[in-house]
Amino acid sequence: MRIDWRVWPLSYQLPPGRREPFPLIRTKDMRYHPYFLGPLTRGIWRLFAYRFTKPGLWALLVTVLIGAYGSNSLQMQGYVPFVYLAALWMIDIIGVWFYRPRVILQVQHPDRIGVGDTLLMECIVESRRHLNPPELNLLPNMLPPNLDSHPIEGVIVPGIGFKKRIKIELGLYCTKRGVYEWPGFRVESEFPLGLVRSLQTFRQHQQILVYPNFNPLTTLTLTAGRRYQPGGVSLASKVGESFEYMGNRPYRGGDDIRHIDWRATARLNAPVVREYREEYLMRVAVILDAYIPDDADPGEWDSFENAVSLCAAVTDYMTRSDYLVDLFAAGSTLYHLLAGRNLANLDQVLDILACVQTSSEASFEILEPELMMHLEQITTVICLFLDWDETRQLFVSRLLEEGTGVRVIVVRDSPCTSDPRYADMPGSMTLINAAQFAAGIAEL
Picture 1 (cartoon, rainbow, N blue to C red):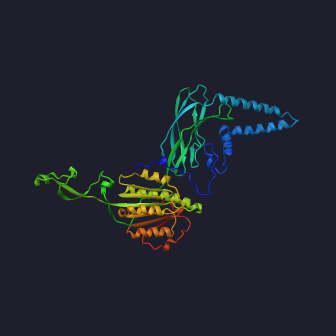
Picture 2: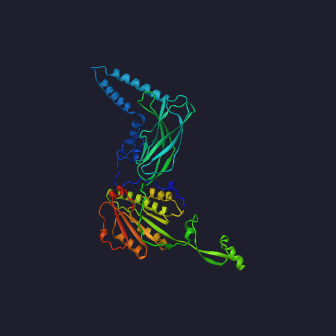
Picture 3: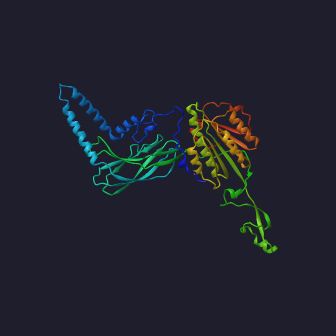
C-alpha cells in the first residue's frame, strides 16, 4: 500500500490561541501572521515588501518629508530638492518597466524531506527578451511559517542572453513536520537604481512532505513471545526466507509443483510433496496517542511532537529487526498500517507520522475495535501516551486481560493526571520528559 499524502489536509495546525508571530521576511505568507489578519494589511505589506527595496523605503520617506515641508513653507524653496527626488523616482520607475524580467522557470525537487534538513530545488531559468537586467533574484513566493528560503532572500541569477538557459540551486529549510504547499516563485529585478523592484510571478503549485526528526534506537526491550501468524512468511516476505520442513505427504490438487519430492515420487510411483510449517513471527502494535484537550497548556503540544518522533524511532528499530509492525495513529483520523518484512517500508510509516494531527476528542473508542480485530496475532503493544489517567489505564488493563504484552511510554513534562507509581499494571512503563528527549534517547 502506498500512502497518497497529497490528498490529505495540509497540517498547519497550531495550538488554540497560539498564533505565533514570525520574522517579517518577504518570502513568507502573511496569512499566518497575527499582525496581518485582513486583506488590506496584507496588501499594504506586499506593496512595500515586494515593490520597494530598503534604500527605496528610506528614499521614499525622505521624499515625502521634503514634499510635505516644501508645500507648506514659504521661507525656503523646499520644492527644489523635491523636484530632483521626483525626477529620480521617475527615471527609476521607467527603467524598471523597460528592464522588467521575462523568463521561463522550471523547478524540480524531491517531494519528501526531514525536519532540520535543507531541500535543494533545481531551477532552470531561460530568458525570453533582449533587454535583460544584469542580474535577477529568484525566491519562493508566500512560504508557510515553518519553511524558510535558503538563502533567506533568495538566490542571485546572473544576467543571461536571449533564449539562453542557466541552472541554479535554491534551498528550502524545514523546521517542523507536516504537509506544506506554496503557490510558486518570484523573479525580481532592482535595475537600474535599486529603489523599486519589477517582478514576475510564477504560479507553479508546490507541495512537500516533511518527516519527523528522530534518533535511531540501539536497544528496545519488549516482553512477549512469538505468535503464529496466518500466512506466516508468505504474509511477510519470501525473499531470503525458508519454511520449516515437517515431512512428506501425498500430492493434493492445488499443491505447488515446486514442492514435489521427485525421489520419493519415483520410489512410491505416486506424487509426493514436501510439507512445510510456516514461521511464527513477532508482531508488535505501536499506538500513538494524539488526544489533547482544548484547554491544554502549550507544553502538551510540544510533547506530542516528541511522541511522534519517538514513534518514528520505535518503528524504525522494529522494521530493521525481525518484526511485523502495526502502526495505529489515533488522531482526528485513525490510520492503521502494517509494516516490516517487506510489507511496507519506513517511508510509508513516516508519511503517516508526518501528517497525523491531534484531536480534542478521545480516540480510544474508534481505536480499540480496530486493535481488537488483530489482537490474536499481536504479541506486544507499545503505547505512546501523552498522559496517564483512568481512561488510558482501563485501556491498558483490557489489553493485559487478553494476554498481550504491554509497554507504556508516557511523553510529558508536567505531572500526569494519575500518578503512574500507583498504577496497578504488570506491564512496563517509562516516563520521558523534554530534557531527556533533547539529550537523545538511544535505549528504551
